[in-house]
Image 1 (cartoon, helix red, strand yellow):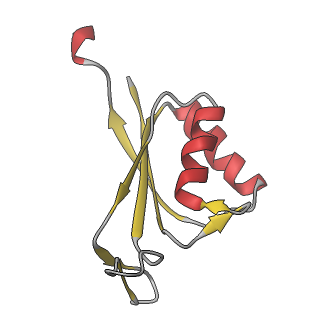
Image 2: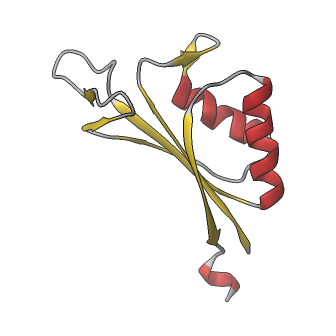
Length: 105
């Protein structure tokens, strides 16, 4: 199949509707019928403000988070439109990909 990899970048302390934004993105993807998504945590990173975000020994609130999913063209449109309706402001990358399962070859 052909579609897109949607990858969202945020940090642990960002929330939407009183939930961690990364976890909220996963739950919304599931509720919209997307077949899989993965949440990654990182040790450190920086964003457009050039501020370094990192996980501290006692404070993990600034920890960088990435949520990634492989989706069809239709699911990419549905998910991104859903985020606009929800007024979610998050940086994302949308990359064209080919995807499938090895047992389908």
